[in-house]
Length: 70
Image 1 (cartoon, rainbow, N blue to C red):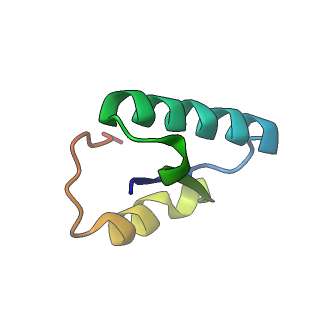
Image 2 (cartoon, one colour):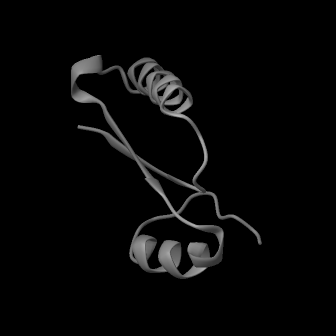
Image 3 (cartoon, helix red, strand yellow):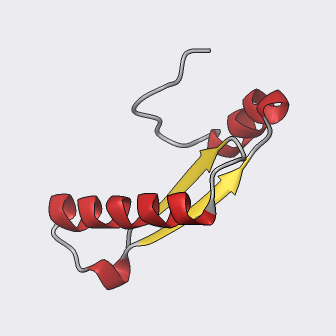
């Protein structure tokens, strides 16, 4: 119970991604009142020139609460 999937442009180090994942996990634990062992975080890197197509396809059917405007 919950899984967070982060999609972003390539180029960030493993250390940056690990730190960000830990911060996301901590935030979810605090806000949703769950334990850390049930929170998972994944990353998918998407090239800028494929962003709109890939993201459009991947989030089709999802409830998007904040939409990017580009």
